[in-house]
Length: 314
Image 1 (cartoon, rainbow, N blue to C red):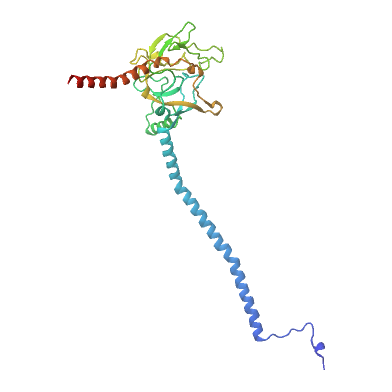
Image 2 (image 1 turned 135 degrees about the vertical axis):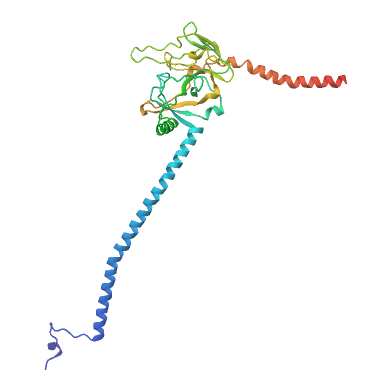
């Protein structure tokens, strides 16, 4: 007889009962199925989900792009029409303050809150009054016309009837050239224009304030304007024989140029020169103010006296 120890050989397999065998095979099958599904599921579902989201994002972007461009253009046109507009400098008339190819920003709101000041650099429309300083060939192609209109609106190309000059005289001013030292005078006060008059880069010679004499009193609602490059600027001096004696209508002013924005190395602001801040320069406008106030005060007094006289006579 063998003992239980002897009968248990190492290489002998113990037979499994039917119940146990079924459980083990079933568990293995179940485990295999779950592993397979686990392997297939993430790759299939995850891949399709990512590509679907990406497609939706791309489609949404291309649908929204025209709307964004349209809104940007509308905002730009609104700002250009009412707030700030860019202008291209086409001529030498404002050198060295402004050079050909400069782009300036023009404040279109400022003159709704105040009048033009002496020394302001202004852009105005010379339609039907001044000839263009620089002529450009008018495009005949409709596409070229449209592109030119857009370029002019955004300050990429110049407008033929837009001019840029410096205000020297405002309504009521007596502007004259010249005093004993060759300087322009405003209301009897001489202007020191050395800070902005054109200076030749080679000879270092500065323009004289004017090469022709004039003596003008600026009328109501008018402005006397001059370029900083006096030798080449066709400004108010070139229109002395026109209606207004060379002055321009103040209501033709588009706005005040306040900064050069292009090219980048020319960036600068355009402040009013200090010579226009000298005391007494605006004295010519003062006599009219007391006179107007005197008339305004005299009318009620005269009306009351007339009423009293009528009552007493009755």
